[in-house]
Length: 406
Image (tube, rainbow, N blue to C red; front, top):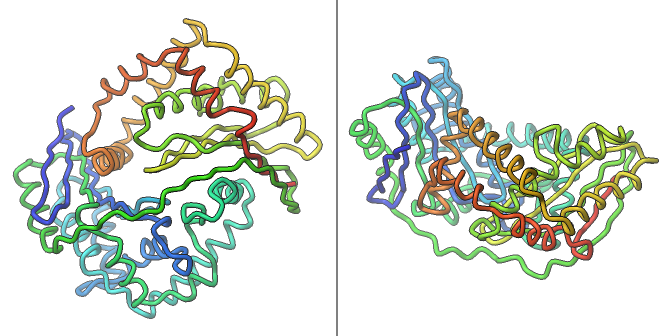
């Protein structure tokens, strides 16, 4: 798997993978997210993600949408705690118009006042909808529990109060402070002549002046396990059990990915799915998640169950944790677990949009991209002793926090 790599004069890094598909994907990922907001800016990164499409110096909102969608393509964006991305899926023939459009959006967004006011109401409805979904809301509340008082604890959407306070001046101040060319990556997957691709990117994105940011993110420290119950009028009890985990560049990261997949990955034969759902009928949804950030990480097991089954379900989760802390996986068990994760990654790699975003994020954080065979070799090299070590660090009963809605 070969990548075209180069850096623009303004410091923006570029990665492109050539494919034979008639469909292409192009985007820009920026190392800025909700954790970079001040307290009175909560929700700003997400608000910008919404309003960046609402007009530029030369286009109105409907012209931005139609520029991609008239050719059958899709324009999209997302915000996380540490990233903001703008990207598109389109037919290869529309590479020039897509690159030009996304550069116009990022460089020349005008944030019209009327559009800002309209979008505020839309986002407040999004917040209200989110608050009505306990199976979603509990993840944010658990991060607030783990990262108590730290900027990374705040939810991405913000609050109705902060969102209503946003205006163009505050938006431009946030952009000026946070969106820097040395922390941007342009990523692409599609069929285009490499020289033509480089010329188009250079033509449209070197219009952005070079500006570097000295990284001043506040590192999280001082995690203390907590147990918290919140009374909510829900049909089910919802519960998350978890711990602070490894940061993005930690050597144990991939081992925890494997452990998380064994516990509660997408497959129906995960240990927690078998224990809670298949053998005992206690839960419809049971999953394990590991999210690494640049300087910390979080591991979570989530499930929903009827209120009278909550204690029994928690006991079964702890039983599976204890098995992994005390018993090494046998040769056959370990081999099957590795093959399962490798297969899942290979299948996910077939989604070219996900591939584009994955290589972009990898280049953003690591300044390199491991090929699939390289990743597979790293997985194959994980030992049962390493899994046992990670299980005892992350699933340590004395280090776990618990949050439940009931």
